[in-house]
Length: 475
Image (cartoon, rainbow, N blue to C red):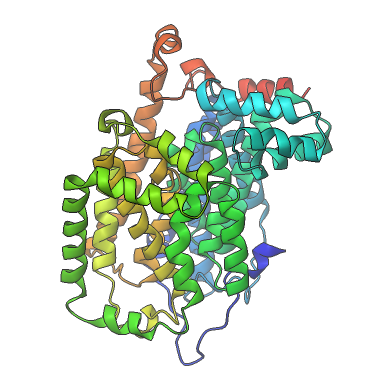
C-alpha cells in the first residue's frame, strides 16, 4: 500500500527522537472532563450531527494524549512505522461517525454552477466505455482521473447517478481522515478537527476536481522517497492543474541530499530580514505590475504547449472585487500566525535540519508558495480557488510549530496555537447559525459566491434526517 511508504526513511541514529509534547500534555489535562465531552458529543450527534464533530474529535485527542503519557515516551510523528498503534473500538466508531456525518452533510449541497457541471459530465459518461469517457472529457479539456475514479466506484457498488454526490463525498472524507490518521499519529484528531472547521472544507463538491487532487497533495507532502514523490506529483497534476504550485516543493525533495546550502542559509541570523524583504518586494511588484506578471506567467505556460492550462488560467482571471470576497479575515489572521511560526523556527537546531526534519521544509515551502499565490489572488485578480488548500486543509500547517519544537508551556506559540483552535470552533458555529438564518428563496435567486446545505437549514437536520438522506440516495 502506498500509504505505508509515507515517511518511511530512516533517521540519523545520533539524532534523538524528539517531539513537542506540550499540546499532548494540555489535552491530557482535560481527562477529568472526558466523560462530559463524550456526553455532549452524543447529544449533538442525535440533534445536530455536524456540531458533534467538535466534541468527538476533542475526545479522541484526549485519548491519544493519555496514551502517549502512559507509554512515558515522547512520540515522534514520523514514528508510525516502528510502533504499531492498536485501533481501539471507540476510535474506530468515532472516525466512522466523522466520515459519515461529513459525507452526508456535504452531499446535501445545493447543486448549481460547478457542481451542476460535474454532475452533468458524470451522468453523461456513466454508461460510456473507458475510451469514450476519456474522449468526452477531453472535449471539455478536463483531467479525467477524478470523474473516472468516481464512475468506476459507483459502477462497482451497483449504484446509479443519484449517488454521485454522496459517493464523491465519502471518497473525499474517508481519504482525508484515513491519511491523516496514518501520517500524523498522536495529533491526527486535532488536525482533522482544524480541517473540518475550515470554511473552505465544505466547498469540496463545488471545487471537486481540485479537492480530489488534495488527497495526493497530502501524500506528496508526507513522503520523502524521490520516485514516489515524483509519481505523486504527476498524479496530482493529472487530477488538477493547480498542483503546479507543488513544483518548488518537488524540486526541494529531489535535491534534498545536495542542498546543504539551504541549511547553512537558514542558520544565518540574516534570514528573517531577507525573507521579510523578499516578501515586501514581491508584494510591491504584484501591486505595481500585476498585469505584466500575469501575462508573462501565462505566456511561459503556453510555451510548453499546454494551451488547455493557459485557457483555464485565463478563465480564472477575474477583477479584484469578484475574486476576493469578504469573510476571509480568519484566513489572513491564520496566515500571519503561520508566518510568525516560520520566523520563530530555530534552524540552528539540528533537529530542524533538512536531513532530520524534511517534513518541516515541505510544509514551509508549500505554505510560502501558497502565500505568494494569495498575493496574486488579491492584487492580480486570480480566482480564489488558486489558494483553496489554505482555506480547506490548513490543519496540516499547524504541524509547523509542533515539529519544529517551538511550542513550550505557556509561551507565545502555545497561546496562539490554542487560540487558533478555539477561534476556529467559534467561527464554524457562527457560520452554521448564519447559514441557518439565510432566506433560501433569496439564495435561489442570487447564489453568489456561496454554497449551502440542507436547503440552508443545517441546524434543523437531526440524526434521523442524516440516516434518511443516506438511504434515499443509495436506494
